[in-house]
Length: 178
Image (cartoon, rainbow, N blue to C red):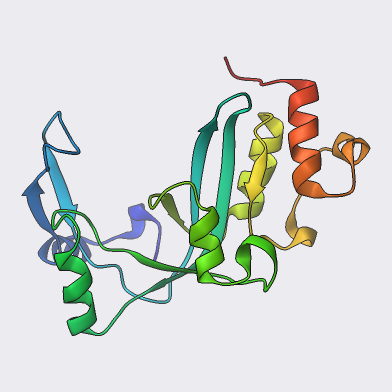
């Protein structure tokens, strides 16, 4: 990966050759348009995140850092046949911590808000947690190392369990968005 302004015309051509454009499925994209279909290469560090709207709480952020993955062609074909063929295919393996919501892949998926998320290149979970605390959005799930996380020092007044402190601090300070 490199910054978009460093991508050459030849690289653009190669990427476009590896991408097909399908009319978007009207079942999901009622406005129409096109959907890009490509397969992400394995081994890229990525961060997947999702905001869930929780009644009585508001937005709640989930974060999972990990890497892109791939399967043998015959396995990919089986998976690809069971989903919308117009969607990009990015397979993701989160970093396991061995505890809580990141005990194993099944615990991650069991606690994830849905089977979708926004994926960014790089491990940016610590930055997202800082942004969320600034906006008073609690984080209810992440696998970011504690020593990489910055939250306002006032959070320490809301308890020693970081997840619970997020909820209590955000409730006390209220949202900075309306």
